[in-house]
View: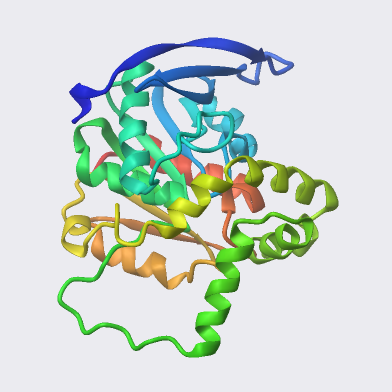
Length: 298
C-alpha cells in the first residue's frame, strides 16, 4: 500500500526557537502525502519519536512534552490528517486512514522507522500501525487508548437506556460546538477540574470546530479500522501502556486488557490524573516515556 502513496518532502514554514541552549528549538513544518498537507512540529536529534494526539486535538497538545523529550529524541508532533493545521479532505475517516497517512508522513520526512507515542485516538493509530505496518514501528506508547474487538466471546449485554443516553450525550459534547459543551467535556477529560479555565475552553472550542467533520466521521466509523484481539496479540513492538487512574472517558481497566493482550507489554498507572496524562502530569509522563524508549528493546 505504501508504495502507492504520493509523497513530497515537507518544507519549513516557521520556527519557534526556545531561549537558552539547554532547550531544543521547535520548528513548525509541513509535509505532503497524497497531495494533502500534513502539519507538524519538530525538535531534537536522535532516535525518531512521533507524538499522535487524540480526537479533536492537534500536535500542540504535546507542548509540555516536545522540548523535554527532544533532549534525547528527534520528536515529531503531528497534526493528523483532518485535524489542526493539516488538510481536511471530506473523507470517511477511520483509524486505518490515519495510520496510512502516518506511514506516508514517515516517508515524507525520511524516517524509515520511529517509535509512536499516542494518546486516546492517537493510541489507536499507533496500535493499528504496529499491527499493519510493523516495519516502520520501533516501540509504541499507548496513553489512555488503543482498543480491539474481543475474539470468540459472548457479546456484552445491551446497555441500559440510561447508559445509551449518557453515551449519546458524551458523543455530542465530544464534538463540541459551544463553550458550554466544551467546558463540560474537558471536565470529563481532566481529573483536576481547575485546569478547565476560560482560556482553555476558548482555545479547545476553536480547535475542535476546525476538525468537526473529521470528529463526526471518526465517531461514525464503527468497526472500520478497528483491530481484532488476535491481531493485537501479534504485536511485536515493545509496548508501554500509560493510563490516568481517574480517567472518566476511557475506563482504566483498558490498560489491564492491553497489558494482558500485547506480548510483553508493560503498564503504568498515573495517580491524580484523567484522560490526558501528557498534559495533566507531564513530568511523570515524560519520565515514563523517556525511560521506556531509552531502555532495551526486549
